[in-house]
Image (cartoon, rainbow, N blue to C red; front, side, top):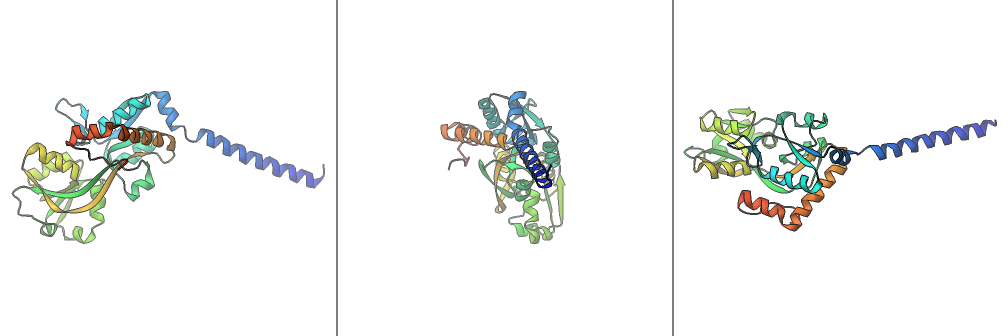
Amino acid sequence: MNKRIFLTLISLILVLAVLTTGCAKAASGDQSLKKVQDAKTLVLGLDDAFPPMGYRNESNDIVGFDVDVAKEVAKRMGVELKLQPIDWSQKFNELNAGTIDCIWNGYTITEERLQETNVTSAYMKNRQIVIVLADSPVQSLADLAGKKLALQAESSAAEALESKPDFKASLGEVIELKDNVTALLDLKASGSDALLVDEIVAGYYIAREGKQYRILDEALAEEEYGVGFRKADQALRDEVQKQLEAMAKDGTLAKISTEWFSKDITTIGK
């Protein structure tokens, strides 16, 4: 065989191999939605101590705004919703290990999380605020100089604090606790002077427990909530996004929000 023809054939074979591999990857790469549909189950990873988004009620059932929204999304997808409580500090590991299909529980959209996960567009706004006991002498962030501030470990509250280095440096101590329920109990017992927490969580507790807590006027950060998926799981992410948009359009999302917050505080389509 002519050497030139031989080299041309080899080149063609290599090109075909690359194209075939690329097509195979395209065909098999993102099977996320199909896997959920075949399993007939969407596994949602959550912190089950994050009221009112997802938490255990008096009967030890997991309830919450995000839980109700996710149940409706799963229903429209034709699958069952499985709630999988996780250690929030291990959320990325749980997702990448395949033990859950998504992270959905007051999941704040941050730069780090956008790098780690494939996130839906925001469906709700939030702020990181500081709460103190009602009779606390603390009236402003400046008044917390030299005092103890508690927050949930590996949470967006921790990221909000890192974004305010001068304020963090002014504190006497930062106490990182497993979840916000524990942190609130610590504040109530005067184990800390203040708690940095999601405004939605703070509002829930203040409404439930009366005037035991007070929110400082100054917020540390403005935030938005989304749903996090594995980076490669675009099809599943897009399907959930589609259902959320449909629920916003037909009023279902507003109805669920009103049941939990007495008004529609969702942001999709607005």
